[in-house]
Amino acid sequence: MSFDDAAAAGIHRLSIPTPFAVGRVNTYLIEDSPLTLVDSGPNSGKALDELQRGLAGLGHAIEDIELILVTHQHIDHIGLVDIVASHSGAEVAAIEAAVPFISRYSDAAAEDDAFAASIMLRNGIPEDIVRALESVSRAFRGWGARVEVDRVLREGDVIDFGNRKLEVGFRPGHSPSDTVFLDSERRMLLAADHLIKHISSNPLITRMPGSQERPQSLVMYLESLRRTREMDLDLVLPGHGDPITDHRELIDQRFTMHERRAAKIHALISDRPRTAYEIAQALWGNISVTQAYLTLSEVVGHTDLLLNDGRAVEREEDGVIRFEAA
Image 1 (cartoon, helix red, strand yellow):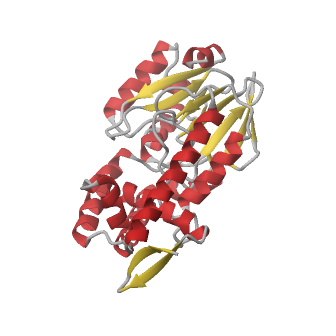
Image 2 (cartoon, rainbow, N blue to C red):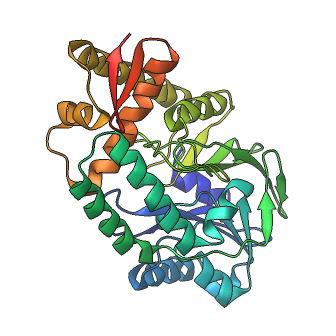
Image 3 (tube, rainbow, N blue to C red):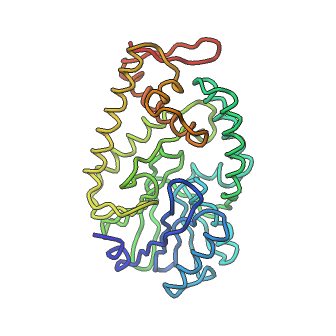
């Protein structure tokens, strides 16, 4: 099955440019009643132009959109939502966990940056790199925008259309607000960044709503993947890249990859205690500033697996955490 099969079922992929390393983002137009846009692309003139052209190619305009579904809080997915909603009057629907962030985007993004800075410093990233990454994050902030949510979604909710129903699934891990939409009759899943074919979805360490505790993002993500693995699907429509036709095989590959990475990190800390930043350097060499938090999230996620299995312990000295094999 392919994007053509989804289009035949009334779900059209619109590929929108982003300024990020991940490349283009997949948004989707559901030709049904209500006419629905799933995600929007980043807040840029180029993205808006291509979104308008993509809609026009299907015989529609932004003003025709009646419903916007938000899959999660990342800026390449929410940046144009407010513009589309203001031009069309569309209702905006998002999972409850996304609302605290997207409804107060600028303040929440600044709070997330402060949270991330504290995590980086505690895990051994030098302060000059932390401050540089904060500057990069502030520069990127303009690609997102505040979203006014009209309809708050929860796990198990059903969205009724003229010719289909979509069931809402909450799958946190890659972000605190990842949401999937299941068309059970057609065995299709709109999965956004929860599952991507060509790359592993990075479970970024991000504040959970109402908490300042560091979440175990990878542990949470693996549990979300287990739930998705149980679903009977023929086609998964991701937020980036190509469609997925065997989600169970892909998810099993992801499980194996994470097990191997945890084993590699265990070997590194068996040699000597290391900070998460030192582990990241051992795995990937010199890390660019823009990748520092992503790689840190990857390492800390796997040390969480080791800690939970009793295979590692963490020691804190002078405010910095080091991991050693148990």
